[in-house]
Length: 150
Ligand SMILES: [Zn+2]
Image (cartoon, rainbow, N blue to C red; front, side):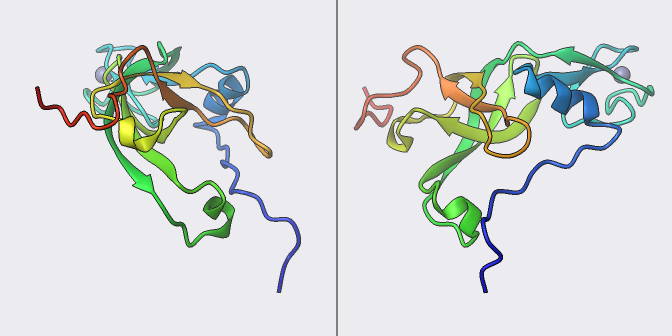
């Protein structure tokens, strides 16, 4: 039976991600940078994944990157997401070199292409902190029917 109003799952905050979600509320995208070797990483960890130094620092990312890969979700068995279909699930590579799972908004899926330039945008969430999603910038989306041929 119905349990009443349903909403999407809300991100859970722990000691490691608390600062990330606080920044998200201010529409700032944070990633970690190693204090020892300078490597960037995402998602948050207690140590650097390159040199294993402890306690990487949070820094604000540029919010710019490129579309690494994507998939169009046509149907969802999860009722909280079914109303969003079709939507674009994507892996975006930030200019800092880290990749994150996200969505692409505002461009029809048929006009998306890998390596398209993207920037972060922050739609308000009905419940919980805003989640970073990305929009194609400039003319990075290809024209309909253009399959990369000359
Ligand atoms: Zn390091």
